[in-house]
Length: 193
Image (cartoon, rainbow, N blue to C red):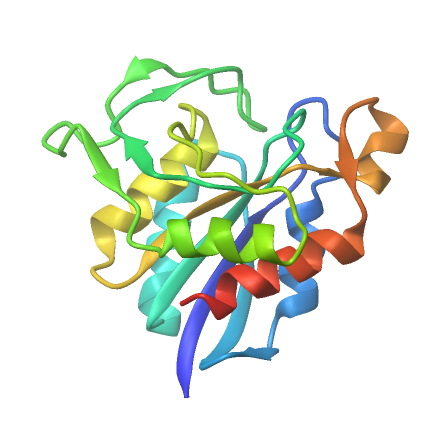
């Protein structure tokens, strides 16, 4: 059976809950389609998170990688089209604030996703879930992880941004989905691999 490395993030910035943490932990060791899932939670740290992902790739030797991230304020699931070679944004969980520096000095400007993002968006829509392809993963840790994964792994890999969960929306007023719907959307996305 093929192996899928599924990553989520710990809570960050002003968000006390990150739905990707719960989803990644819940899907750990599940089988979806042709893949057995290994779920791992990443830190929100520009100095460590990329290396953490590379170490997980070496440890688990996956056949595919799907990374999940919170896009608070979005109202739909958004598979990302491209990661760019840029770190920028607010402070991470350890106080580091990047200022537009490159992720890799000699790296390409960007990497396109190697996930079937069009099929993912269409399958989610057919199942009744709002979804669309996003053309920017931003410049924060989500983009950082997507870029690192595509730089260090040759197989299917990419990133999916998710709306807030109701659990998070209780603390922060914003569009939200139920945990069950977020979980089902991730399963449908994985089945497209």
